[in-house]
Length: 118
Image (cartoon, rainbow, N blue to C red; front, side, top):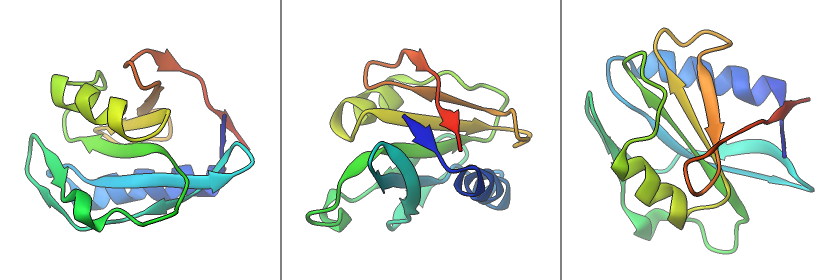
């Protein structure tokens, strides 16, 4: 799986702009390349970001999710793992201080995976 560099940079900026709260978005694209995020309404706090599934777009291919951790922790929580198993195959966690290396990608079981930046 691949992700566009400009998208990853925009997601890191979104995480920074939402600090000290978490943010959440869906990831979409085509032909194995994550190209866009879908920012659906969500509730946020310092330790959570949750969304209403009724806002999920119909017919859109969802590759996965992205959310931030306002701490330096990049490991998925139990709630994160629950979300991972429900929405796509690639899940990105961006953590404080939101630098270009402050993120990790996981599969739907919470195992770290590599994403090629294109």
